[in-house]
Image (cartoon, rainbow, N blue to C red):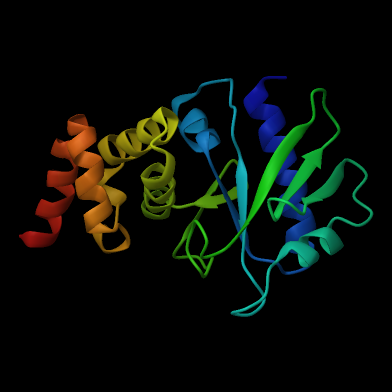
Length: 192
């Protein structure tokens, strides 16, 4: 089984547990580009989980949803205030970082922010770019830049410019000029 298949299996297992409890969620990370490009190897997957209320963290709800799921455990790291779900059905196990909605991705994970790939909910292209751009602004990792460039160039017709922070994109384009033609094409859709 390829890495991408094991990541998708882990995502599907987590998604099933969350969906049974009515917890809205969506995945993102390198895995999306890897699925779309047919790359059999993937290195990163995160799950954004919608909070129950404005001031609640979804970690307890995730831990509760995973009770009784034999191949998944939830590990909270107090010093970093992060929750990781570990899929133990494979070796090495797959770690999925759980992120509260609004922290990286959109606050609401409704149908307008989510798309299905291989039966698993992922952030749509606009939200993927927005989330990756937000992360890139902090760490400027090459993998994040590759994702942004790929989605801009390949899926520019499906990107909602209103979801992308213009100031952050300007900084990104100064460092990654190869993405400028795609961004101009997106802009032209909204100005004509």
